[in-house]
Image 1 (tube, rainbow, N blue to C red):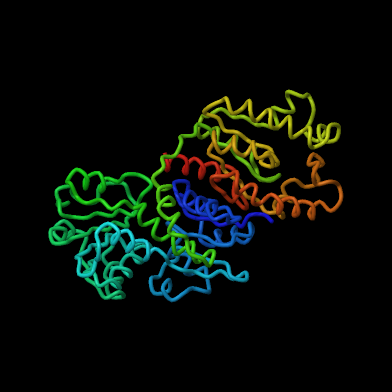
Image 2 (spheres, rainbow, N blue to C red):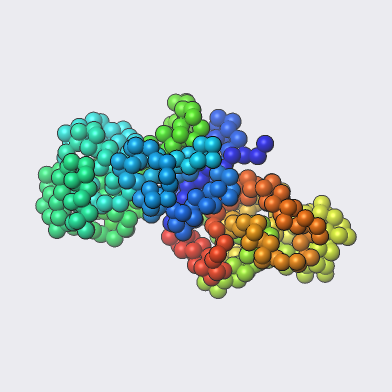
Length: 436
């Protein structure tokens, strides 16, 4: 039985450390599942891709938490009240929206500070994460003030949740009288004067992908820093329970948390994988133009070195021999750095190939559905696995068999359907640079 697929979707998404946590837990508990990232362009597209790949559950991150409310019909009461969704479960082919961000922010604060009842807290922002934080803090009897650059949004939330509101220009003045500052504004730039951050202040910035000016200034001023990865961790625990209907044993929770603090190995190459017709070659060329990195096409190199077309190798030598040639070519490629590598559709079938790719490359799975595949390749006879009869049926069967294999090989899935190659290349470039 192939692995169940779970994912986190957002824009950007490569920075997300959720896969490290969930895949660690799956492995330790012997659960036949894989957790990936989806570089989505919208909440609606996220659900469409999840249906296509047969995903069993999703986490949703910025900027789709609020948008997802208008996409799903079935939403639990907490998520409805908050007005944002960060966790989705698939129950009998029906998607149900939840919100575990509220658990995340309370867990992070109480783990580090103890009870927050009666604490004076400013929540900066009015998006999905801010809404969950406000809801959770008010439910814990904290004294909450909302501040947002758009005062009208802050005022609306204050009325909804029954808390205080202040104008953005009053932020520095208000900070003199509070215990905890929670920033849910997605920026790395300085938004609070450094002098306004008092030593007694506890600071939690929801942005964990990079050290923000707020966190740098807070450290300099000897504030108490609550690492945003703690929020991520404490929201992941109830998400896991929603996904699998079971609790994470306390024996692995501590080690699961440690995966968040493991430094990522820097990878010099970008690899594109995906099914036939996903646009790997074309997108690789576009990406090379953007990055000025070296372009390597595995299939093209094989044809050059053997003097034979891929279809001819399949016909004369068989698929087994082709896969040996393919693996040898990939192994040679792994000695090169600063390259864009376009891989053949079946290269991920070999576990050693998957391990080489994951170790040496940031791997993007270019998603394409069967309808688009058949439209793109037409009646081309250079696709030996399709045959000449029942081509669409054969394509569906092969793609279904490979779904979890592509998932295991990739860092990020990105949908290519209905998008121009340059659009996909720009998104990949953005993900790489946003993370770096």
